[in-house]
Length: 96
Image (tube, rainbow, N blue to C red; front, side, top):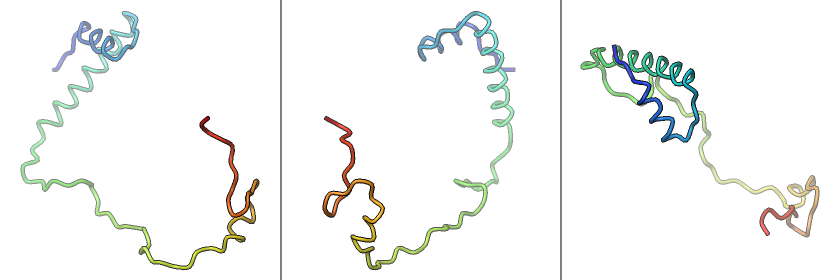
């Protein structure tokens, strides 16, 4: 059973700049110990004959082929623009 100490939790909290009460340290220590115990169980699983993969299921692209086509006419594109300046859409300044 992997155990992490309260001092290690306090050290991690310090590195993360997280203030933790003694009760929170105890709860976190128990939770982290449980997580590490679960990782130990996974590390014991024999995966020697399992082929490495990036995904557990085959992926199929749902994207369409990239095909060149005519653009939308400027007037049609700007028809619903709330604030227009010629062939451009005017927006509020983001940076000064």
